[in-house]
Image 1 (tube, rainbow, N blue to C red):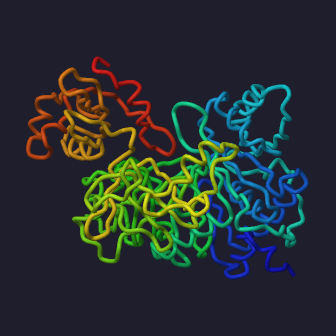
Image 2: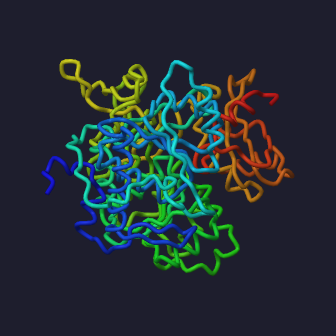
Length: 528
């Protein structure tokens, strides 16, 4: 029998002891379902595979794959061995993968067969002096793992004696997004993952038996820490699929009596535009949440009209990602907010000099809590910049950080304690001495019937210094004059876009998230 210290991070064994026969994971692509007892047995086998290859006590396993059951096996197995689970985006080009593999420095790389060529090319870019990790192909038979890890998993599924780990030990590396430079690897500890799950369960009201279709990719914090790990924590049911399809999401909600759904705004919009939307049975959904950017009011109303309590959330890889929740019976006039802080989250809005601002004023959002990441892997300067923030009225003691995380996002708090995210600090621009926050402008522009999606960027202007340019995905018959007339009673004149551009489709990065950096690079000049 394991001692108490041996259980830190052994999620599958703890949950299997509590609810062995409860459905835990369904692979919608193959139709297979596993209970918590099944998952723990799979994790025991996978833990032996990892231990045999040195993935224990802080060593890393990098994974390049779409959403598959094997990823759940690996994350639970890392909980047992003390290894670190480091999923990498399968959407990256070989040079980008090479940079991340060099940062992670894994003992083992597990790759889905269809991405073997990219990983081989990436490892070919690794400098000759570096140690090359072992590569293990995730052999597949069509969409099935057949057999898992190419038959390398031991047959022994008896309880694996877990390593004695601390809540402060690394559990996951998740890389941040970014269109330029090498993404940073964020170090999530056992404790930060547990506390994020605790915040989610207590603030969102997750229950045993709750089910969700997982629409985030499992190389992203959304794929693990928005709902997957919180639901595994409470004994819920996660349904995965290889690729996102809006019609499939609707069918999975009905087939599995899904009670919760979290997605980025673009995914929520695509679901409402699907042919099956009018007749889909959504009665099992207790609530839905939007994250990853502002959700248009029209999209929210479409879900409300179907009886689904959709609200907005906020988070980031470095902290959470679940930080806020909507109070019970929240009023619809607060729909633009992300709610109030969760149970174990502190939030501050501060000016450039670190002094807290008054309610209603815009400043940078700082967050603090036991759910925060430990920092960036092997990046001390970037870690200090992001994780060692301290408001002026909350000084450090003897040089020890107060533990605040700089989000880089602008926000305000209203008199009722609700927080509103106004966008990234780097996206804000000053026009004629007035601050302009693109999300506010985008919300107004998106209300125009000829606009599907829009990003507003600042461009140089001889008169005002900077003005807005609306980059629109939609009907190209829309003119700038017509847009300005539409906005006349919706926005102050200095916020009106003075330039208009059209694209067939806005670029995305991550899980259907609009890539604002790419838009700014392409359109951030007056003549672009």
